[in-house]
Each structure stands twice: as structure tokens, then as C-alpha cells.
Image (cartoon, rainbow, N blue to C red):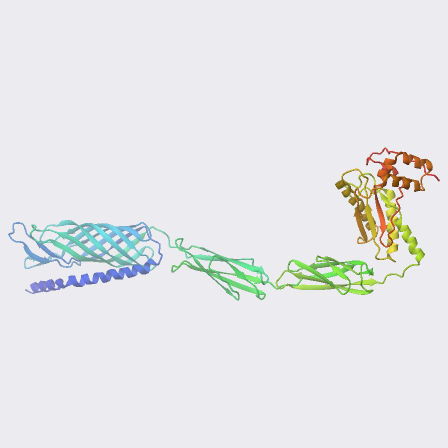
Length: 605
């Protein structure tokens, strides 16, 4: 009698179970979704296979309806009791980090207890199901959702076993104990399937219950745990001067390739900005010393963070150094002196030069300058040589040198000046045909003409002591053969050859004026006859022979450079060197042939 009451009490309690369980099921599913949302932002490597085994509890939430064979009436509906005697297992193949397919089985066996001669049905039930599983993996826990479809077998004591197609819908939470083992804290599935144990007039037995499980989940294969990401920083260059730019670069490894890596920069004592893998560091205004730069890399996941640091040095700047000298250190009033600067930068910077002087005029922007003492009074002129490097603002240095300006010598007696001026008139300088050439611009000056120029240079240097502002005017000529362009270039070479020879023998390079006449200002036949007639080195017979070859003589007399003294306007006399040893080379109209057009006679003694 007590067992009957107990069964009745249990039956009444079981009637209230469906509402409570079904009310709890949405809350459980909502909790799974909450965990899934949290885990969805994480990234945990997935195994390839999962093997679960554990305890299973079934609440069928169903009344058993049926009719025994030979019975006239169906049995009254009997409530199927919850069955705590069960075990479950499943195997899952994971295609990726979140999706897999599960093959699931569970069984719940009856108790075998009898009361008042009849068996109490406590939902003996088993299943073999298959379906998708979605897992949201986290480092510590992994919630999952599943839908399983397959064979559901109900095995009541009063009736025969029936297999029907059924559905399980639910999920659970695994707590990760290690990489290969997890505790399945709970697995809750809504179970639905229908069974018929009587003719069509009798209601079906409909399971609308819940299966609860807990156990261990074993994981195999898949990716190895991801190595924490790392970062490396580099700076280029690592040593700079203030104001120079430094490029900072960060590189990361081990980050999730499906995520975007974000960069942030900061520095110690230096401003660093930027959100890219490389950034520029402005060192303007930084004091000498060492500075650190740090990059933080983050891909948005919990462990997707790494940082790195690097240091650069701002060097102590050094100003340039300079020394300068004057050559010559003493000049006459109106003379020039070359100022030479010797500068260097200990830091290897580019340098710019400038000059100033207390008197005279100075010009030049490189490592040499020229001081012109024209209009300067006798005494000392201080020249300052300045050098700046290319920094902003620049570092500078300066040095000085002294140029002594000597007063001009007292004017010589008038007869001596006149004598010098007469000697300076001297002779014009003659050249062989087509000499000097473009290939050999330093050739073409024969020995006899070189001796004339040496005498001219010595006399002119003596004359400068009294007339320091005097200049020599050199005018080049050519015979009428050849084109205008050819003769112009030829006379320029003759003038330049004459000037260079005089400079080599002491005449200042800035004491010349040069003119190239080309085919202009030619000596005529009549002028050539007159020059032959006035030449004191020719005998009457020689003059006649020259006149017999007058055309050759006209050509020879036009291959010359005339010299004019600027202070007096005196011009060199055009006295052809008939007595010179190199006369034949000068007079040859073909330029290089040894056979002369006329035979040279012995001069009259």
C-alpha cells in the first residue's frame, strides 16, 4: 500500500516536471549563446577528432499509450518516468576551428522494479544520431551547439520496442583541462520522437523531453598550440645628429594571419607617431644622448600582443675647422693675392665658404678667393675666411690672414721709363703655318720667337715696378687661307700660346687683354713690300729674292701675334726674323714640309 502511495506521489510529481524542465531549457540555451558570443572573439586551435563518453539522464516528458494484444480496450495512459540510468558517447570530426559532424549514441535501461504485479515504465530509451556541431573555442572553455537526427528506440516494459526517426537539439559547455582532455560540464538536448502502440484511435506516445549528460571529452590531432607572437624593432640609422630623420620599423611573427595587426608607437624623451609598420622620428631639438622607441603590435585577440624596443643615439655636433693663407703675402698697390682656405668638418658635413676683407675687393665662394688691392692704401689688409656646415642652423668657423700692401716704387727718371717702353715695343711673334693645332695647343712656338718672349717678360716685369697698372694687349692674326671659323680658332690658339708662355715666365695672368682677328686686319701686298724694304737685316739681293716670292712673304707676315703696351699704346714692330735659324719652318706655306719656297741667303755683315 505504501508503494502504491509512493507511485501515486511520484506520478503527481512527474506531472509538474515538464513545465519546470521546459522552462529551464530556454535559459540553458540562452546561457550557451552567451558563452558562444564571448568565445567567438577568441582563437583556440581546434582538434581533428573528439571522443566523448559519460553519464546520461533522460526526462521523457511523455505518457505511454497503447493496447495489449487481445485486449478489448486500450490501457490508460501511463506517465514515463525519468530515467537516471544511462550512458552516452559520441565522436566528432572537426573540419575547422568551429564546425564539425557528430555521431552520437546513448542508452537508458529500465530498473526492473515491479509494484502490485505490474512493471513501472521508466523510459528505457536509446538513440543513434548524426548531425552538425558548432563549437566556439576559448582557452579555458568551449561552448557548443548541435542538431542531431537519427534512430530513437523506445523500449517500454508493457509493449514491444519501436525505432523511429527523432531529433535532438541542444548544446553544452566543455571546460578545458588540457590540450587533449576537457570536462563536459553539461550537455542538454531537447529530444523529440513519436511512437504508436495501438490502433489509430489510440493516442501516440510522444517524447518531448530533455537528455542531460556530463563526462569527459578527449581531443586528438589538429593544430599545435599557437606560439605566442613576437615582434622585432629596427632603426635606421642608429646614430644621427639633431635634426636628422630616423626611420623606425617593426616586424611581427606568429600573429593570426586572419587578423589585422595594429601598430602603436611611443618613445622615451622623443615624440613618435604613426600607426603603420614604419614611422619617421623627428630629432629636431634633441639633446645629445640615447633615446628609446617602443612599438606595440596587437591583432585584437587575447594573446595576440607583442612589443619591441630599439635605441638610437643623437651625437654631439662638432663645428668645422678652417685655416687660410695668402699667396703672395705682400703685393704692390693694385696687385692681387690668392687666398687659400683649408677647411674640414669632423662630422663629415658639406661646407660653404665666404670671405671678407678690411680693404680692397675680394671675390670667391669656394676654397680659394682673390683679393684685388686696387684703390687700397698701403698697409695691412685683414682677410677673414668663413666656413659654414649644412646644418639648420649651421655651425660655423673662421680664420684670418694678412696681406701687406706695399706702396708703389717712386717713378724712375723719365729716360729710364722711355727706354723700358721702347724695349717693350719689341717685335711681333710669328708662327708656322696652321700652328699651333687644336690637338697640340702648346706647340707652334719656335725657339727664335720664344727667346723674344723671354726678353719681353723680363722687361715687362721691370716696367711693372713703376707702372703696376700696365697691361699687354695681344692681337692674333692668320694668313687669308682657310675658313672664317678655322682662322678665328687658329688666332685664338696663337694668342693663348703667347699669353701662357709669358705667364710661365713671371707675367701676372690678369695683366693681359687678348684679341683674335681671324681673317680680319690682314697685311696687304703693298704693306708687305714696305716691311721688306724697311728690314735692315736684308741685303738688296735678299730683298729682290723676297719680292720674287712676294705671295709667300705676304702669307708668312700675316701669321703673327702683335704686342701693344696699354699705358703708351706702342705696338710691336713687325720685323720678320729672316736671320733666325728656324726661318725655314716659319716661312713654309705648307706647314710641315721641309722644302722652303725661297732659299735663305747669308746676311750681310
